[in-house]
Amino acid sequence: MSLFRHWGPRVLAAAAFAMAGPVAAQDLSAFETGPVFTDFGPHASVEGASELPSFSRFAIAFDVAEQAEDGARNRGFESAARFINMHVAAGVPAGRIEIAVVVHGKAVRDLVAGDGNGSQAMLRAMLDHGVRFIVCGQSAAAWGVSKGELIDGVEMDLSAMTAHALLQQDGYTVNPF
Image (cartoon, rainbow, N blue to C red):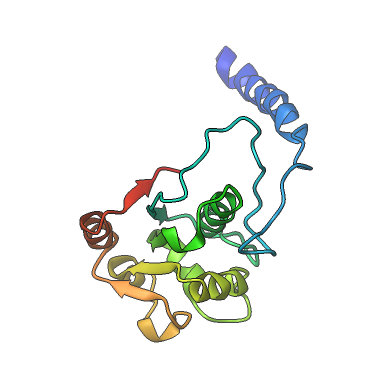
């Protein structure tokens, strides 16, 4: 038996346990929701951060491919809400923030209307605020999701690549997080 086969799994488990400690020790007490979305999108104010000019225009595309765990909210969708809350709290007028969430892969399932969708209420609030959700038509076809199954207001495009190309032509940048 090789040494790695014998000790490798134990070493990897010990390393994972050691790395979990700092994550568990995070202090999230400084995080709050709002001012736009009060039930989701937590953020913290940052003392000493550069002041954002109120005339800034943020046109940001979020790329989401990871599906939420059963009954949970999609973390990629919530990141877009967090961006809005964080920047409005920092003084950027809400009307100067334009967000599009391009959804592909298994995450298209998180845009389907139904009781088991933990993201549904959050999506509705974000859509009502003007956030665009654009589904990759190729992923929808691959996962058997039709336009009629999507939450009202969700858009369908030919592909995620198409959506990103069109958004870039409209001045959107892609958020890498």
